Structures are given as C-alpha cells and as structure tokens.
Length: 176
Image (cartoon, rainbow, N blue to C red; front, side, top):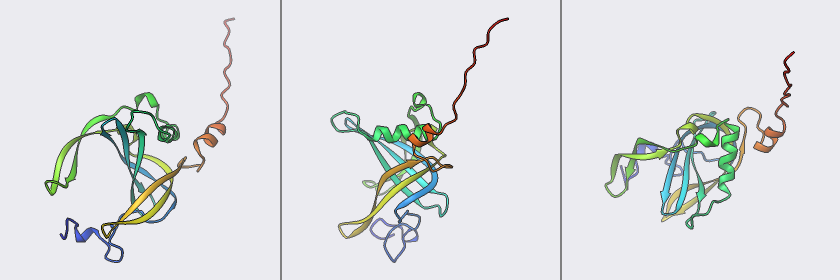
C-alpha cells in the first residue's frame, strides 16, 4: 500500500481502479447500493451502479435536497428510477444497515451504521452516464454525471415508457 492506495486495485497505466467505469454512454446494469448521505440540510443519494457487460462500477450522486433545504431537480431523476423499476415512492424509506467503509482519519476500514434505500438494491436499469477524468493534487479521479435514465429492457425514458403502457379497460359489472 502506497499513499493509502492498494496497488492490487490500481491499473498502472492510468492510476484508476480496475473496476471503474471509464467510458461515457448508455450502460445496462444493476444498482448495488443506494446510500443516503446527510450533510446539514442537504440530502444526497449515492448509487453504486455496476454494469452487466464488464462488471464496471460507478458512483452516482443524486442531490435531492440542497444546502438550503429545498428540493432539487434530482428528485425527478429519483422519481424516474422508481417508476422504471416499478417501486412505489411511498415505500422509498431509508433503513439503518451496517456497512464497512474506509475511514480516512483512522486510516482503516471500520463498520458503521448508515441509512440505505434497500428497495433500490438489485434493481436493473439503464443509465446514460457522462465520464470525465480529472486530477486533484496530481491524483487521477473520475467524475460521473447521470445524463439519462432508461428502462432496462426497452431502453425507453420514463415518459416514453409511461406513454407506451397498454391501456387498461375497466368494465362495470352489474348485478342481474
């Protein structure tokens, strides 16, 4: 381990994790975890997304509530994810779960209690992701931007999927 980086998890050519998603585009995959991060008034959902094809990972952040306590446009993205994954928004409640995370101050992996949206775990979806490689203090870092959310099987947006749902005909049943 050098400078807190495990050399077994780094590609020497670009200094990035081996399993990091490095290409922009539309990717089919699974939401592995959906963690709620609360910082003051703001609420952020961290989605760990894994692609089906190459098992590459990307951490996507939905800033649901800003620092002033106001809802942001990311709420619409969360609504689209719920609709396309057939999840009722009313059951989208974070639950306390134990997780292992690397603590930078203690410089070791510790077990912590975090809040997760468990109903999103394991859901299949397509994400259109923009990937930008940047450097912070000379260390390469990938920044992900969630551009679009698509139905896993059909590749349609939430609006297209809703508009193409078959009509349901309700007939009155009258007593004879």
